[in-house]
Amino acid sequence: MPALNRPLIAEGAHKSLNTLLHSLHLKAGHPSCRQLEKEIGQAGISRSTIHDAFSSPRLPAQDVVMALVDHLTSKTPMANPKRAKVNRRLVYEMWVRAAERLSEEANPGESPTKQGSAGAPSTQLPQESSLVNSIYVTVDEAAILLGVSRQLIYRMVHAGEMAAIRVGRMYRIPEGEVWRTERVLGHGSVES
Image 1 (cartoon, rainbow, N blue to C red):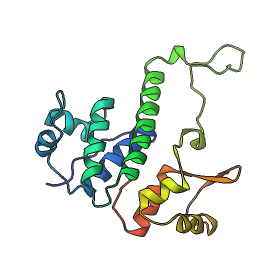
Image 2 (cartoon, helix red, strand yellow):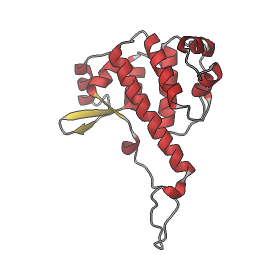
Image 3 (tube, rainbow, N blue to C red):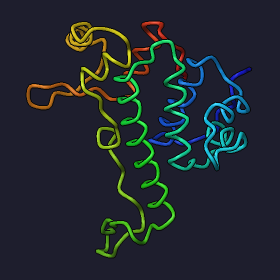
């Protein structure tokens, strides 16, 4: 089956979630929506719901996303319980952040406002830093996702080949950096 269409989604957690879904779909061998519906076999998850999860600009329901991620992760060549656990955590965080963002956009009056130049509240949301919006993985999680050793991750971070931030004595790697590194290493073809 050819790849499912990617929707136009603004940068952020929703786009990262969609990118991860498409990556897992590719690694699982591009199963059809009909095949996924049959294999998942969960009430309320039809092939049109599955298609929408990949191709619609709307945020899919959390149970649909989690069922897809669990199933697709189990079908990938690098399937293992550790990888499945890391994927579940990432997907959960991405989905929650995307849902929060949609809620903020739908109800701008309920979010904190900045003071305007005359002291009156402004309805504009503050510009969000990419560091604040990033979802981070540990060195161990990055190694699991990429199927490489922790030592290689540390070498790449120290050589400047992989961006990371230092928190105390530990490193945290933005999830987008993991997908970029995956493309560089040739383990997959996640497209941004």
